[in-house]
Amino acid sequence: MTNRRLTALAAVVAAGALALAGCGGGGGEKSGGGGSSPGGGGNKPLAGVTLEVAAKWTGTEQENFQKVLNMFQDQTGATVKYVPTGEDTGAFLGPRIAAKTPPDIAILPQPGLVQEYAKQGALKPLSAEVVAEIDKNYSQYWKDLASADGKVYGMMVKAAHKSIVWYLKEAYDNAGVQPPQTFDQLVGETADKLAESGATPFSLCGASGWTLTDLFENVYLSQAGPENYDKLAKHELKWTDATVTKALQTIAKIKPDHVLGGSSGALQTDFPTCVTRVFGEKKAAMVIEADFVAATVSTTKEKVGEGAQFFPFPKAGDTAPVVLGSDIAVAMTEEKGAMELMRFLSSAEAATAWAKLGGYLSANKNVSPDSYPDALTKELGRTIQASADTARYDMSDLAPSAFGATDGKGEWKLLQDLLRNPGDVKGIQSKLESEAAKAFGGS
Image (cartoon, rainbow, N blue to C red; front, side):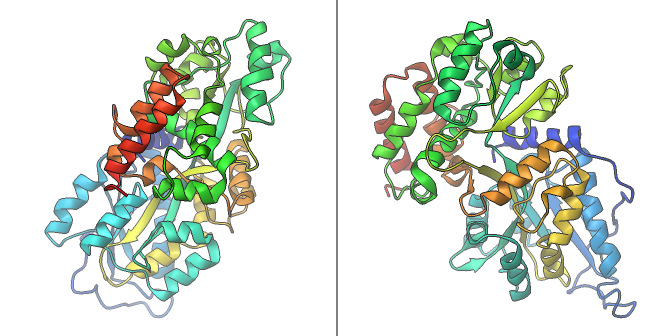
């Protein structure tokens, strides 16, 4: 995920996490030479071993992760030292890799880094025991996403749910409408009735181009299906394909006069300002974005589940879309205990404990939705499980960053151009294909 998305995700964890006893962390220096000899008998097989884990999480998000690490420490006797990477994980890891002093475990913000570091030889393939744990708890899609050249290097340790429409209950009540079942209903009857009641239906975050890629991905996954989604994500399908035409035409059904400030206003509204416009200023009725919208809602007078409510992104085709982002745990050393920690993080036990803390979602299919402490995450947990075979990773984060994750370029700019001129679908497609071909090396 981009830094903006990750910052937003960190914020929702801080806003929504529940307190749990047992916070604390292991200090101490990293042990060398494969770790100290185990002591304490079979009950503490990693006593004397120190492991280093690097991630960008801070605040409550870091505290909750440390509580999960504490479980591993209590069970094994190992000491786990957490090191924050800062916002740019790559900038932190690069010098450590070059100096041959990487952390034992790193949490990466996107799958592309798995491929990059695997190619550099900076990652260690996961052991058969860890892979077996992943096979038990995750679908093949998530396993493949953290693999390279036929080897499994990582696991999807933490998810963000991007298939949500948030709405102001007051506006819906005044208009006498209910959450729609289809995208056509959303942009048609529902939006029309909201407008008739005096409410502007949509607050779009057009200045933050990544929010428009999220919108496209949900529509495309729903209409074109998982197989075509995978092909387009790899540029095995051209952006001039008819499936892309249909998705862009579907997005263009959002009427400019149903958007706060019109197209021009939307293009000047970033995330999270678009959320504040709905729940703080009550200038619009809906915003289309991920679970981390809850963080911004918490800065207003509205409360999630009360004045601020949500529904799943409505179907634009045959598939109920579930688009996820995720953080990926990888092993960077063969230090004693590293694979044991990777196996623990892959387990339903660890994910369930983490889920109970709040502000966390997992793609682990053996985490019961009842493990989540609030209505929002319970519902999102259910949708992730129900769509285990069709859920897909954020497409723009799978693409080369020049195409999928750069302000003023590639998808971000061209989807902004579509918002500015929704009648130029064919022209936008042609430019998307040209930019994708360059970014993917002419593939």
